[in-house]
Image 1 (cartoon, rainbow, N blue to C red):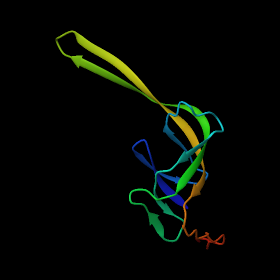
Image 2: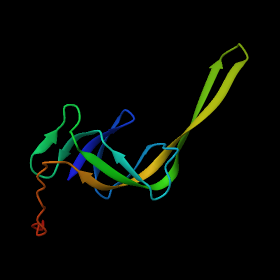
Image 3: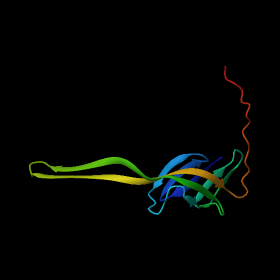
Image 4: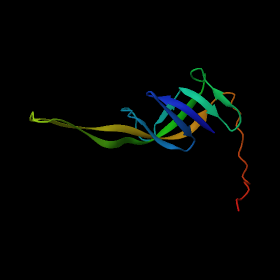
Length: 121
């Protein structure tokens, strides 16, 4: 079972138990629950439910596992030759780490996977 959510202009494909990073939530604390209510698509193994643009009443719940995740450091250099003009700046984006705990979609048919899958020989 998976869902596609929208958060801060990004679309993310999420499954239960998955850990991912989202844009920084300053008020988030460890163990706190965050609810994403912009669910664009959901699939439980059978037919998909597609929102227009979002599914009414659908939510994805996540638990904060890391309140501050630092992204890669980006360095920006500007140089104009023969003008003695140089500029060097940097940026490091901050994120919040979350773990998806539940996907709640009304009228979604969840098809269970069979435990006995044929072994490839």
